[in-house]
Length: 106
Image 1: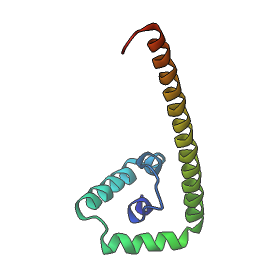
Image 2 (image 1 turned 45 degrees about the horizontal axis):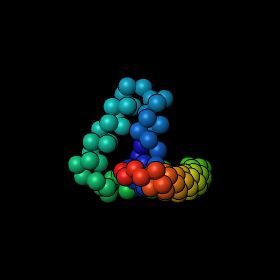
Image 3 (image 1 turned 30 degrees about the vertical axis):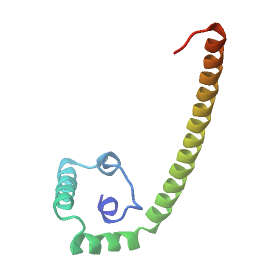
């Protein structure tokens, strides 16, 4: 949770951050989120974030891998949407031509 608030490279969802925590730990996370929503990044958050980031280097690697996978997925998804839009436009043109031949206007 601290890393997700500390730096946008650590984009863990709230659910991912709290799923294995007990109530006391979840309450702490809620308080951290509330503090962040009121104060944004504080010197304390920055200090703790830097310390955690330094101790758990594997999280940086995992986050980079996740970010790259998300980017590649999004790029593929956008390409598929673009292809579908092009196909829809071609279908619309074909229907318009068909309607024109039949004397129907939309």
